[in-house]
Amino acid sequence: MQQQQAIRFSPVSQKEFLSTLRKRVDAYFTERGISKHGNALMHFKVFFYIGGMMTFFATLMFGQWASFWQSLPLWIGLGTFAAFIGLNVCHDALHGAYSSSPFLNAFVGKFFNIIGANDYMWKIVHNTIHHTYTNIPDMDDDIHSTLLIRMSPSAPRTRFHRYQHVYAFFLYGLASISWIFLKDFKKFFFQAPIGFRYPKHPTSQYFNLLGFKVLHLALFFVMPFFIIPQPWWQILIGLLVMHFFEGFLLTIIFVMAHVVEGTHFPVPNIEGEIENNWAVHQLYTTANFARHNKLLNFIAGGLNFQIEHHLFPHICHVHYVGIAPIVEQTAKEFRIPYIDNPTFTDALRSHRSFLKKMGREDSPEQKMPKIATLEPVMYEKVV
Image 1 (spheres, rainbow, N blue to C red):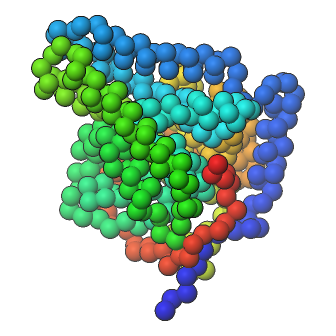
Image 2 (cartoon, one colour):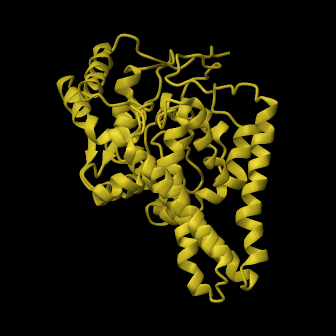
Image 3 (tube, rainbow, N blue to C red):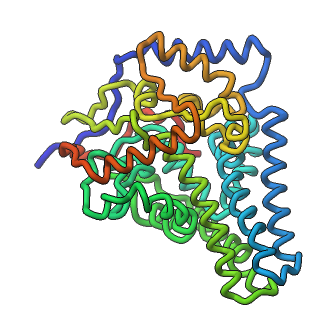
């Protein structure tokens, strides 16, 4: 029987990079006398996006829109702002980056549950697993390949993948529906990545999961049919349109940061070791895009600065535009890749090209070793 191995990162490879980078980033905040948490801009974004979604919701529910075409922009706005809340507000709060107050972070993070997701599972699957084992096949669920979409060179290729660069973008629009009705439940009750064992879920988290799911369904799936004076099928179309915009925006922002040309999908060696240390691994597996696009900087929650986010997830995203030159210069000094697609279009084209390549080219078989329950030093603990 093959001995199981735990994944670990090289303890000595490029160890000076992260210490040097942290000193420089700390100096950036010290010299300017500013906090690493949210500033006035971040506070404005919280009220703007949460207030915007509430406005769209109230207007849609109580505006007495007799015409489907009159209400359609409100469905689109509701889905769009739900995505923006996830990207700009809850993402920072659940990383502890919005405020120095754990209570305030937890309170703001609960809006993640109201829009249909689950904050507890997100901290495990995203904060801990994705941020530690980025782009590692069978560990990082965000690059999990399916029968219809192949996102990793080590995943098996099927005949369905040949045209994934065309239809994948339509499937992205189903992401939020899948998240609400399937993903959280599957992760909570059944499925952990290979070699990773979830902690025993506290009893309170069962109520947290089920209670907020019921609340979300009551608000967004039941109320519209009782309140909006339109045929049921028109309301159903509105709901699908809302979720298409929400799911597409959430997914496309992510895939253009990890599933593009130039990013790596490292496979551990037979001893279960990744060649680089954790910090360098993040630069090989992560990409920035459209850093100078002011509109995207406002709506993407800093996730177009994905490199900075992965290296410093506890720093509020409004500061990434300031520290990005420091990260880029330090990476250059240490001869580490800094993957940056200059525009949104460049990133979108790169993602599409990657999907096309994954759909039409086989890759050498790269199976991970059997892995025991992992106990590495996590970059961020689940709280």
